[in-house]
Length: 402
Image (cartoon, rainbow, N blue to C red; front, top):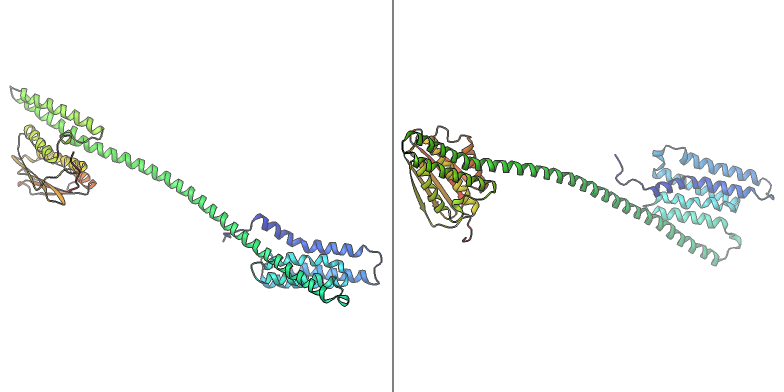
């Protein structure tokens, strides 16, 4: 699994420095140790032997080990203790090897995040200053001075190492949070684009459905009425009345078509409320269909929301159009009931009835869609040969006086 907080470039570079510092400090100390010409007897072989021991320890306990094993706490501890021990031996043999002791400060960083970092730094400081101190000649003041230096150095180096790692952790978390935020923003941008596309398609579909309903409720019904009147004109000698009705229907259909394109409400509702518009609708329908239509309004009339009034008006139009085309009725009743919380529209005829009241024809589907759009419902009851009852129920959402 990928590390959610991978090491930064600075950390990787510092780790490489920690890997090579023991070799560099050991080689530098050896070089300076061999430079003086006045070497004590047997000094050079002992120096080389101790250096070889230190080198073997570095290689055997760290460099030559598998990478996965190097970071184990026990292995890190053994490696550090060995380096510090060989550094102490070399420093007591030749003080110039205090340079090699410095590598202990770098190796102490591997204990970071824990209190052992301070112990590692303190041990390195003790070896460094202890090997350079002339103990037989050392005074109490000098030893106390060295102890103070060791304490300050331990707090400064150990604390700085831990603080640096914690700061780097916070930076990694911040970088990851920024990366996650950027990813989320990109995903949200893609999602936003998809939602916009879907909303656009949904808007197109809604507009198509609206136009289909408007055409069905206005142009289609108007054209049906025109055809009916023109056919009637062909059957009689005095056709003027039927032709006049056909012309009026054509004008009204053209007006309604223009209003539908502009998404305006029916002209009957422009200057009147629903009861008056229903009365005008009934009068025109009776004149066109030649069927007696009785309109009744019950309850306390209240001005309704335009969306509610348009919906009920269009439902009444569609229901009456179905009666004219299919019912063969001689009497029709339209009742508009204000009952407080809801408004009811009932249209009943004494025609042939409907064989499938739950049919999926466009007209019935259009009425149901309109009513659902305003939180209403539609019920159709019919018995073959005994007529049909269409009942629409909508919430009585009111609007202030016009």
